Image 1 (cartoon, rainbow, N blue to C red):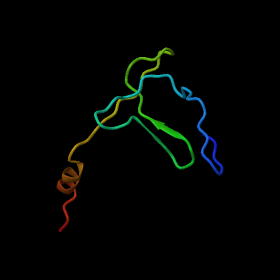
Image 2: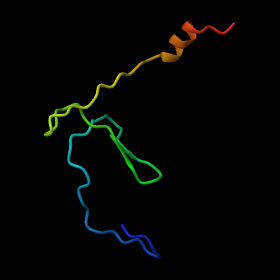
Image 3: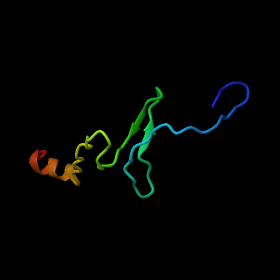
Length: 72
């Protein structure tokens, strides 16, 4: 894309070639205001032999916090 008085779109290009985490109804990436990409990669082994780190999801953490630190 080129900015200016009119928008000019160029030929599409592949930016990344690695497995991304697929979600239903969401997207596995976002773009920061400064132009950097945030991408959630899948846990599949990559060509270099590295694996993505585990993701720990804590549900109802606020209820657990209220239980551990009660407000009097």
